[in-house]
Length: 531
Image 1 (tube, rainbow, N blue to C red):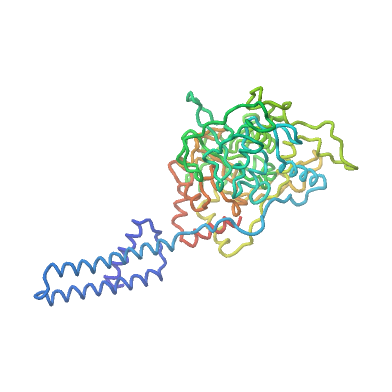
Image 2 (cartoon, rainbow, N blue to C red):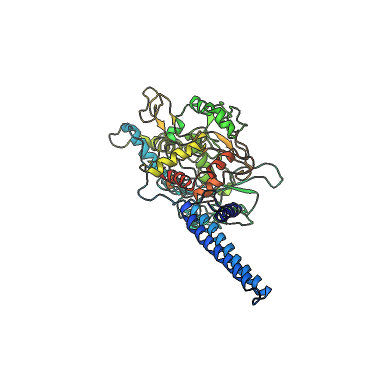
């Protein structure tokens, strides 16, 4: 390589790094651009020689202007190389994978009874709740929505936020006088709001429901006010508003029964696997729930909890009953008291959801799912809901899966865990074939990790601290719209980048990701969108 050309290459690389352009540009494209620059540089040199030959005729000022102009052209040409190389090198999230929903079906190998209870749970999952006078009573006094499906509908029942936010319509339903909070946008995610602190400065951390039943035709006489969520910020990202509020979006429940069926010993064994490799990357595993990479433990029996953004719920029954009470205001057998006991706003007996002792089976049926409570029915639906079906492999997907593992993402997003050998479902003596000894391709270690100040929400739940979150299972991410715990982005690249921040366990992995070639980065994105 000539000295001139070598110098140009060095300057182009230096300028590219200053502009944040990846280190390995497409060589063919740069060769063309460098050739053009060399040609212009040669022309500039010729101008300089002509100036020297005709310096008697040309003034010094004219000569200086011509030389300056020539080198300005070169500078802009070099800048164009950097910009064009940078634009070509950025991987792109192709967006939500098209085609039919790869989820929403029951597990294979279910018995006839399991299928009956699955269908019953699905029917209740999509039913609308009212305050009183309907077939499903007990809504409110404070609530976020009136239906499980409203929060868990994309790409099918059991998923997460849909593209069009259903809470806009819920706010004014049946004559309600609710104001839609600033962070609930028509094209934004379903969100719940938690306050970090109480007005007196003490820790809060609880959910503050968006809506009240005041003004509804089925809640005459109730007059309570919504919380004040102002000042407002960006309605799509949820950023820039009231600093005392943090948000959570719904977690998908596809394959939840398989997650519930994974023994603690399997989770702990995986946590201890490859410990030295994890330590080199700043990823740590320890049975103490307060240390990074640790499991969140139940305060009741000490076993590992695993559902929710901070793995704060132990079982699907607890997960369902808490959501029924907190998200819809419906008291139940696990949460028997109303969250707001304003007398004028209580219209039905509590708990609102209970066992149905007097319900007789229909026809000649031997199974009678109608006798169980809604929270048990919801649990059955989630327990027997199949995980998402990934897209078929392509060369890009195969390479992306390998690169995902190589850079260290799989140390937390574990490819698979295996359920227990004998898992009961409907019978304590005959294990369920659908749930027992199954490989769950969840892409999660079900542990909580320090994600740093950038993602911290300031809330402690169980053993999960203010900046700790459960490793989100990635199955189904290909058809997911909103990402991270607060739904701040719809772009997978942004979600990956947001893993890096002060005190995040993912920092070194993200650094390794950034050192990959553009094609390898793109393949990882394609792999994730295949799940």
